[in-house]
Image 1 (spheres, rainbow, N blue to C red):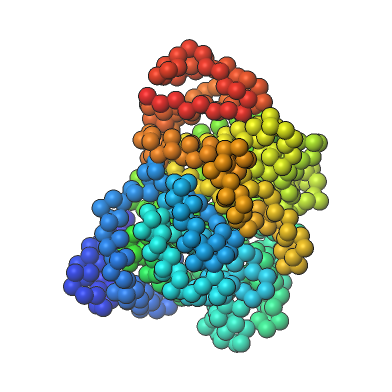
Image 2: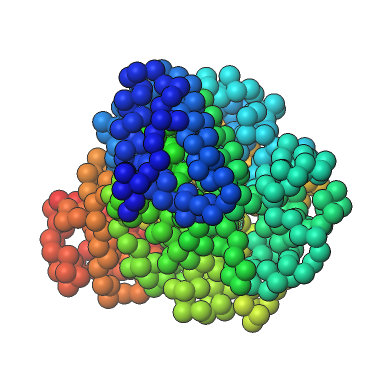
Length: 619
Ligand code: OTU
């Protein structure tokens, strides 16, 4: 670790600050400066003018700290007094598109009552900044980091919403698309107009030679809708790196100016009141020939630098990594003791493995994922979830499945309803590919559609669908981390097929799980005789049980108990909590002493688990 003595002076950071803030910033620089400098020197030390660039960066960061509003400075102080606030067992996330959930930002504010009724303390709004005109990947093609999508409101509306949410005990999490910008973002437009400085913000190649060398080891995120990773752009007289859609231009983080611009954009949003940033597509930030250009060490250096910057200028802010990668690559996103990175990271393989356990009536993959998941370093935690706006990509489970692509392809087919299963999922990408060539189709669908509500005929089938829905949510709530529900799943909302007739969306089946929030379902929320009411009531009860159970705080260690039945999952948290999950359609008898689980108040000896049911035991 670099000593503070070797780190450039804090003076450029402190220059613009009033006295009280100056002292705080000096303290924070003493804490975060060494790692910040070490990481940036490692990334950019060889770039000409690095020393000057670093000073300018500090001055920018200082200027943004000076501009931080008083209520957010107060929040910084509150969070500093309770840094582990987001690890508490009463934390509950909820993820939604503002347009779908509330119509616009003001409409989201009118949904706060519903969020509170559910117990939500953290609201993740999918991209709400001004996006590319026309097709924009659900807002993930950002045209401006400083403007709200005019259809959703204004920056003032964002500030109002942040304040309303905070008053209700809810932190706003905003998407921050780190990896790329839209092809109509000012940086891309400038580059196309011939600005040499802005051209260097992107990866541009004059011909196909380098792209082809890279392609030989790259994967593809959207092989059907957006094959390849490079797009020919006549105005650029060359090929631009576009990992996702052709209109999403990857940023070139080998250029220090890009990091400086992005860090400043993030801090400007933090100063509007955003408390958490979901860092989209983090795995892809650094390119290296001969690799898949994912999870490179420089990605972690960049994220650690960003974390240090946030720690200095907006310490209340949390960073959340979205890296949809195999289990072995996940822990790095949370950093290490002394080298903090993101506060939260999506546990994407836990999510996928929960679904696989349902399909296979076997918890082997789920147990393998859990066994390979280390406890996070202090002050960091997993984001656990069941569904989100994206597909379930099964191939991230290939390690746990021992490379058996056919096995995962079968899980996918199960959820697509092949062979008359209960599931009503929709394939995403590679729909036509044969499992034999190693490609595995991803799956879309609302939770209720995947657990069988849509195909259920009669009360018993609906009851089983409900149990399955609770079972997968039970894993997310008991695992240890911050659980996040996905808009509509709390009311058991169905798939929405309207996208098929929308020319800009028809090719992207992820829209099947981005329905408009249904006010009729909401009206039935408190009526236990309806499907929506039953789902809501049952989920709400689980959330409440979790809230009252200190062993379910994120930092209580977890322990997996060996199970005598392949369809059982037995997960202990500390000494005072044990959850049993029956992932089968059979009634299961579990012998607690034989499981090594001892006795629990009200339970000793054998307990019976109904099909697809779970039991949470507490001491
Ligand atoms: C993220 O997704 C977003 O969540 C998607 O909605 C965007 O389309 C995408 O970035 C581009 O901004 O790989 O780790 O397979 O799981 O695209 C980043 C589909 C990602 C998503 C994948 C994902």
